[in-house]
Every structure is written in structure tokens, then in C-alpha cells.
Image (cartoon, rainbow, N blue to C red; front, side, top):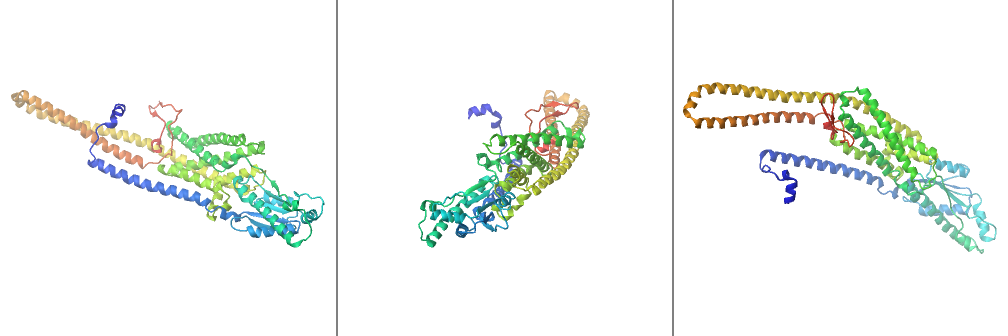
Length: 527
């Protein structure tokens, strides 16, 4: 303890008693403010937790919303076995099997386009003549190709971590259940000797994956990667705010030029940032079958997404009260991530609002790019992103005008505050001088009496003069305190310029007007 006192001696200095009136009032105000913020933040984060957990609530129970098309080109026992198997597996936790006739989808190529166009999440079909070939192989030694019986089509790139368990695995379960149903049907309908080896494995289910996506990094394409993009834009936005405030550009450069500068720097920053994100995805793609053209398109759509978020966060910082900006940031991140953490078909209908979120649109656009057009959502995803871009750019530009207006008001207020302090000091000095003159006049009439009183009188006069000087200082301090309190109250009512950081590469200096320039910490200081 003694060592700490030597290091931080002022921390152990004298403090006013807790019973002091001003301290008691400050303590009550502190606990009131702390309690209100305690409740508000708890409610906010409870709401965010409920929102994201609610999107995952009973996810398996919404699996029936995923539709798989089934086409039986054979029309024999195998198709009957598939229908019997589905009747036993059908439920809320199993994808819905939608049967189409061969006339509706006349070829496997037509089925492929249905899955590619995201009409269905997957497709299962039985090849023509499969039942007769299998029966001949079971009862005779005729050649038989087990892989030319049943196949399914799916796109692993489309929410890779989900479709493995919600599409591919259920189709395989359906195939296995159909094999059991087929074996049982033969046992009751035939009395001839069967090839037991072939009967144990009558077909080999073939998988046609439109875009195999087995790499481990696939798990964060729609989560951490997008979160980092959002946070990246927030940090640079705060840096831009700090620079503009540090060099007092809001009051020295026309607003339209600031709009152009902010737009150009944000475009350049998001251009490079999206290149880094796309480059990281490609660097760790682990043999993923994507090419240079897909890399360029991924880069471009990430660039648009990053700039949309830069502008959106800028809108938050200028139009929301400064204390609410961090809360808006975390809410924006959670709402966006929730819109892509799962296919919206696996969440409650309420979460379909995620279709309007930039994260949902950019992720589905990237799925279309990676799948070579087999996720055609561009008809709404790109217009939605551009709508966000136009709307947020307009509000951001209007926010620059607001910042410039309020910056001028801020400098005028600072000049007025300085003048008020000077006027108060001058008025106080004039009053002191007037009082001193009056005292000197009174002193002349008392000189004779002071001479008679002797040295004791001079000592008393000196002490009285010291008391008067101390009283004057206290009176001046009280006047300045009243002015400072009122000025701080006016500052708190002024506009916030948004969060800004102290700049690690900024150099404090003095401009040609003699104003000190420092990195800013808060939106209030930015004025």
C-alpha cells in the first residue's frame, strides 16, 4: 500500500466527507444514471440475444420448408419403395418431397435447372428401366450397373454447413429406407431364388453436387467474415471523423468538397478492404473450384457491400445521439448476421424481414457467383444493395451539411464562451478597482487615527487586506464556475459529430490561426 501511495500520491489525497451536500447530490445523480443505463443495456442485449436465438429456435422443426423434387422415370417397384419410405420419414424434421411427372421434367437436365434456379433445394430421380434391370439381375446373371439406378442433385455452396445435414443426409436416409422397403416387397411377392449379395445393396445412390464446397472456411463466409467487414468500416469511419475534426475542415472547406472527399476516401478504403477479404477467401479456399472471374465478381460485390455499410454507419453517427451509436452498431451487426446465419426457410416467418438486409443480399449474390449462376437472386439482391447505397449516400451527404453547419455554430460558441470569460474577468477587475478606490478614500480619513494607534493598527490592516484578496479570488472563481457550468450545459445540448478516435499517426500542431489541433475522442469534442 505504501508503494502505491508513492506511485500515485494524489489518489490518496484528501477527499471531502461523504456527508457534504454537493457530493451527496452527485452520488445520487450517479446512481440514477447508472441504474437507467444498466436497465437499458440489459434490455438491448436481451433483445439481441432473443432475436438471434429465435432465428435458430427449433431449426429442425422447419426442415419441412425445404422442398426436394422427386421424378420417377422408371415407374416400377423402386419408385414405389421410395414413396413408401417417404411416408415413414415424412414430418416436420424432414424435407418435403414434391413428386413431378416425367412429362413435367422430361430429363435429368431439366431437373438440374430446377435445382440451379433454386426452385427446389435438391432433386431425387430414378432412371428409366431401373426396376426391370434390377429384377433381371436379382433372378439371373444378367449384367447390372448399380450406379445407374438412383441419383440426386444438390448445391453444396448454398449454405454449405446447412445443406449437408438438411438436404444431402435426408436424401441418403430416404434412399436407405427405400432399399429396406424394396427388399421387404420382394420377400412377399417372389418365390424364386434371388442374388442375396445384390439384394443387400441393390443400388448406389449417385450425388451430383453443382458446386462442391467442402473446405473448412465455408463455415464463416456468412458469419465472421461479414462481421469483420462491418467492424472494419466503423473503425475507418471514426478515423475520418477524427481527421476532419482535428484539422477543422468542417469550417474551412465547402461542404460539397467534403462530401466528395469523404466519398472518394470511403470508396478507396472499401475497395482495398474488399480486395483483402476476397483475397483471404481465395487464399484459404483449399482446392475449391472457383476461378479468377469469380474472384473479381466477389471482390466487386463485397466492395459495394462494404461501402453501403460505411454509409449506413455514417448515417447512424450523424443522426443518432452520440451515446446510442455503439448500440446501433451492435444491433446492425446482429440483425445482418441473423439474416444469413441460416436459410430463412429454417426460421420463423417473422425473420423474412432479413431479405431487406445488405448482408443477406450480398451473401446470396456471392452464392450466385460461386455457383456459376445457380442461385439466381440477382433480380432482388443487387437492386436492394443499390437502394441502400443511394438512400444512405443521400442521408450521409445531408449529414455533412449538418456537421458543417454545427461546426460553425460550435466555433461561434467557443468564441462567445471565451468572450464571456474575458468580460467576466474584466468586470470583476473593474469592480475590484472601484472598491479599492473607495477603500483608499476612506483610508485617508483614518490615517490620523492609524498613526495614533501605532504598529498594532498596521498589522491588523495588513491581515484585513489579505482577507479581502482571498475573498476576491473566491468570488472570481464562483463567477467562472457559473459560466463554465452553463457553457457545459449548452455543449451537451449541441449536435454530435459521431464517434472519432485519437489518431496514432496524427501530429498535434498549431494552425495559422493559432488553434491547437489534436486527435478527437468523442463526438462532443469534435465540435
